[in-house]
Length: 261
Length: 265
Image (cartoon, rainbow over all chains, first blue to last red):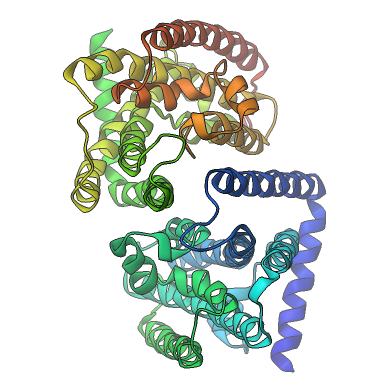
């Protein structure tokens, strides 16, 4: 309850900040709509030239686009703004003040800045997912939709945990202020099913920077491609990733000694 | 004059070299999209034999060539200069007896390009070894014929971006405007697919715009996939756009500098 209150206060502050720059918000949202139009055009170009991409139909790719946009929105709304703040605080030592506050450092570090207008991004993403799922309604099962929702949330959690681990590494390498660039760069590979990629690229996006766990895998569940034990396995992976990231984070915090010390 | 440029090169090379780790990250951005498109389209071509006559190998060579062309013709003027106009540090450069864009900015671009290119080579070789494409379309002749197209392509994107950057004299929203231009470039430059796969309307418009001259034209030229008429037409168009954008840039820049009253000065 206490955490929820802190969180809602942070949201309120960010809404107020957003309202101060209304013109920028309008421009940002219209750009978002233009990019969405392009994304859909790109998919239609692919599907005028082929009936399926690695066995996936147009509806499934629209759903995948939605999932990709959801992860991307997480990146843009939360990860970028807070990372920027964190990196500066790391360098000039203002992180001290954050750590001294009587609230969990992780909560403050990862939720202080929220690009509120990205709510639109979430709405577009969810809409794309719903449209995509309806388009590919052929072989949908309740179990499929349920495991899709489960894996989608666990994918987002994995992505969040990876980010926390990246931030924690900054405690050891102060100049590591490219900590999330590599996540963003590889995220692009989440637009298409990892199953069409050549093996080496599939390895990278599945094991090294597991973008595919957050994008391809949930849609695979939706398609009914996954066995129940595979769903459990991916959920297990999420639990492990969270546990490991939290450990790295705590170890990093212990390592931190302020900027001038 | 040459001495001035040489000195600018030394400064800018040293400056860029300082950020070589960042550069690797930029390169990651640069490489991922073409590699993903390459994977998607060669998968489609493999599944059905070809896509409108293009085989999987045609796609691989297209995107791999595009990777190189893109680094050679692209331009980072906006990132070098826009903030200087906004925070007023441009005034120092305006006091010098040389044109800030045609010296410092241009040379900084070239230094960045040289470093990016050097870093791209090993990555490109790794992709080559992984994909094993057949590059027999490329001949010594086509490479020679493409060299001027690359120069023109860089000139075009340099003047186009410099003009865009000059808009910073009037508005702080120059990054938003740039994003809009980026959308146009995605649509018309051939970076998503070879333009022949784009919807006919887009192809019609694209052939007159400068965007395809910076990516599609040099790429297709080096791969020997254009008819002699197309080559002549595109070269003529490239010269036209280079001059037109050059003139537009000088007019906009002049007007901008007149308006410029450095912040805080």
